[in-house]
Amino acid sequence: MKKGTFRCACCRRILPRNPRVKDQQYCGAKACQRARKSKWQREKQQTDQDYRANKSESQRAWQRKNPFYWQWYRHKNPSYCERNRKLQRARDRGRQQPATTKEHLAKMDTLERIMDGTSTTYFISANQGNLAKMDALAVNIIPITTP
Image (cartoon, rainbow, N blue to C red; front, side, top):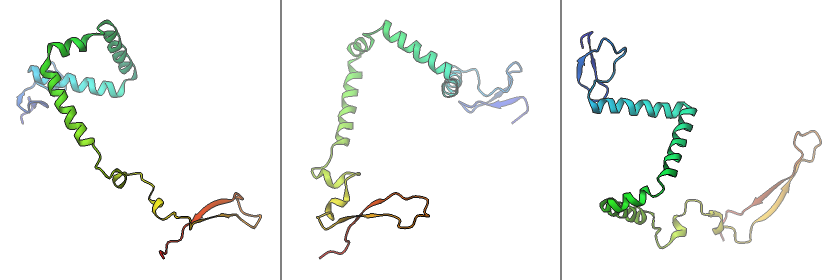
């Protein structure tokens, strides 16, 4: 790449550098400028707390002024509603649990199978006075051998 050229970060074309734009990374095409602005807004949103607060307050104010916008939008765009319904049905199908739900739970208590009344609770405590912690510790001891 020549010294007076640059590669656009959006469209990847090699173009002549604009001498008035220091560290030029994007060309003047509408799509590339939109990408540049989106990147700037994303970074600003992540790093600037005031920008974030102003943006959310602005959105809330707009929502207060336009409370029925989404009802109007859905009424005017029935294809949007139908597409959303189809996608929601697909998401719901993906969430359905199999008939034997208990076998597939991630946080199921696996000790239920072996806690059949044969376990006993013991308290373990220090018998010497020079230990740093003198608290008693409740411990469940479960027999592992099966009859």
